Length: 180
Image 1 (cartoon, rainbow, N blue to C red):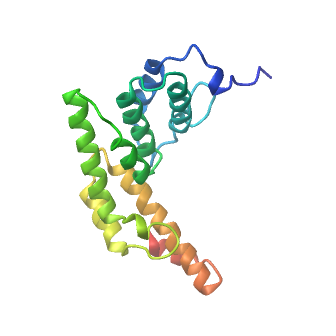
Image 2: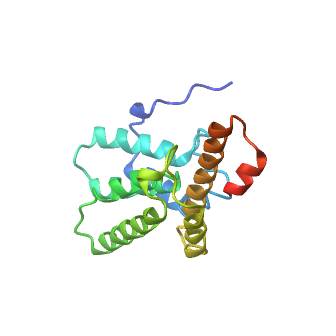
């Protein structure tokens, strides 16, 4: 066995560019159909990048915040966490017109997706109608948002099956298939 991984807070050699470049390289990965990309230590790249960005931000307070927040937003998006992504994108304050336009498009896209999957209905409890998931899947087919929509639709299907189990005391495979 090799040495244990270097703790994130002790990675002095790490630059913002190295973190951002890894995330940008993998941002096109379909995280619904393909395994999550991993970093050099074999950990989920997007989850690890959020930790690494936080450590970088602590070492460099106030520096390049627009890039840090944008990159974190991408990570949350790829992890299937649209509310966290939306909140993080809203923190981006930049004078770079291209980045500002990209962030505005991300915010608009996430707000539209969340109309199909309202946050107050995600999780156990009230769920949006199944046809809303189907509409979202159809609406975002072939777009950069498709993997996120599939993740949200599948999470909703799992929650429907769990609700069915809770109401009947058992999980029927047909209930899960119906939810999908």
